Length: 408
Image 1: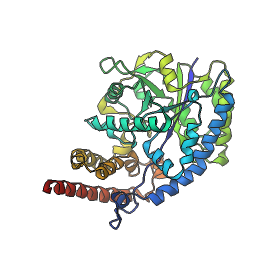
Image 2: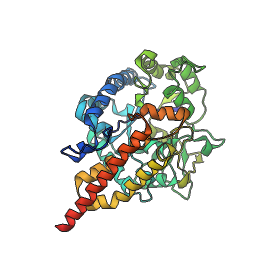
Image 3: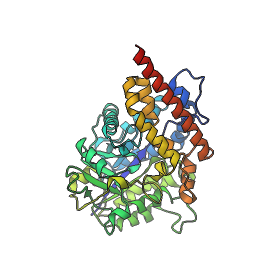
Image 4: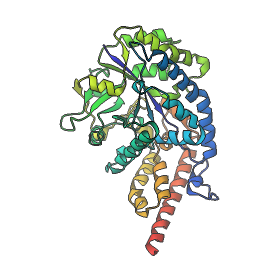
């Protein structure tokens, strides 16, 4: 009798100025980031996705909240998304606050949607989790028990660090290369020598991508996908839990209203509930209810994610420019923090957002199309130039500050 856990990743990056550093800007933030463009994107996605999807979910939750099988959902919302919502659409935050407490769970993740967990020193990773946890407390009045790392990036060290930070569960991809013959529809744990204080929840890749990627694909032999058909697929799965984890922008942005995606979303909770053996549950309920039935062992040099065919970290670190940018930011941690300059420290954190690296991926074929879809650069080489310009300028600002401090 599997529990259905429906989780949405809610994130918008703060995008850089497309053509590099604006040396006439009065602040360091405006020197690198384009709030005009960021607002334009946020406004568009709010209209197409955030408002209609949230109203849709609220209606379903309220319609079923007093039934024997209430509809439950979860959100993993980045600090960057909440900052932009507070600035341009604060009523969106109020909408998220309207979900009854027992029907919604808010998860933790890195505040800046960064790759910081791939650093050898996990101190900054823990700091960004603490920043996010404090945000969840101040905005929604909760202390999350479950976390998702950026892009579901996971390895044993990340699991151990999450356990030490007090989390009871962590989400990642149901990677078939790690699972082997096992199913993603069970609760797992890291190897015994890593930690016994956290459980691992795995995303059901096939079922999630059927909705997230293939819903409006007319070339797909299962198109059109109806709530009845999809619910039957879910019901045909055995296990403890079926974890459907997807971008919130699936609804209205990746698949437009005209595709019928919102009709699907409205019908899905009711169609799932027609199956006696299925019921919705939050991730915390899943880990409290079910024992871990196996180990999920991911060596730290072989990290996994939910991205692309490889399901590794090559979406962000697959080419030389990506790796150079990542390593340079890593090396800057000590100098930046040594300045004790709040503006420089914040900019350093903002520059860690994984989207900056995702935008300059140079993969080909289907994965390349996905990266180009999300990128605002005309081509990766334009992104290379912009990131290099910003990084070199930022390093100059950091070392100027250190010299200034040394003269005082």
